[in-house]
Length: 150
Image (cartoon, rainbow, N blue to C red; front, side, top):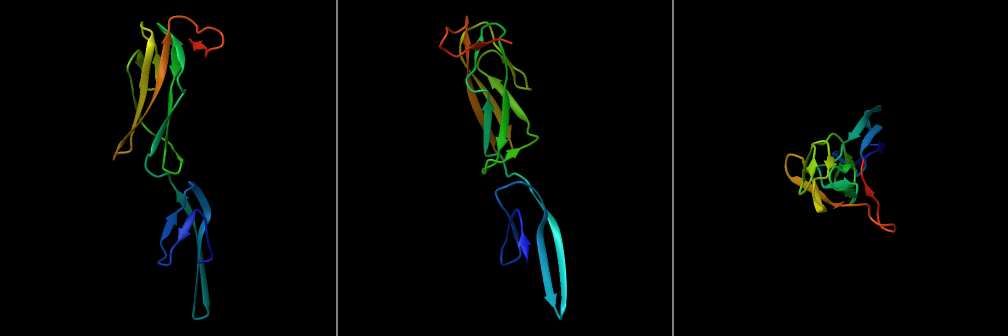
């Protein structure tokens, strides 16, 4: 073995992926010498993210106006090394107001603190992340966070 990228190769010849994801052109080059002949082969290694380990939800604790304030929530899924997992399906729930399956939250007629939760499954486990939404009657006074209505 002359070179390895994207992981390591053990004494038994098995490739073990590293923590980074992506395509590693010429990721593994093997050289064999026997009876005066040298053979060399190179392969591209593609390392994919591992299973879902964490879900991050944004924005964090928004303040919205009662009766129609809106916010676009986004959920990102990550493996145990912090690599983002693309093409995930998210189920949403909320304790107040309404949220679409695309993450679009709309306040209801009551003020208060409500929870928005994103639920992601990797086929083996359910991983959740929640944020609070503060729904207020009027704009928050100067010096506090802005209430938003879109």
